[in-house]
View (cartoon, helix red, strand yellow):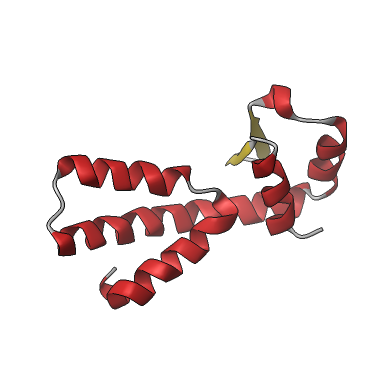
Length: 109
């Protein structure tokens, strides 16, 4: 199973993943099933790399969204909502959203 598929599975179970050093942080931990735990442990190195890269994508995504807000002249409330929407996007979908912003607004977004 690929890291994207594992993240999709975790997300559909209501779980988010993040990296803290060499640790994969699962929140909320009480949603972690034994089967998903086995999957995460078995693929931990790939997941650590994927989630770390996804974090970098998150930073780029929020920056692109803020540039799109700038182009539309959005106010503080709309910008805050856009930022929250970007951060709420599951990590396995953020690269697609970033590509969308770049497609819609060119490289300026």
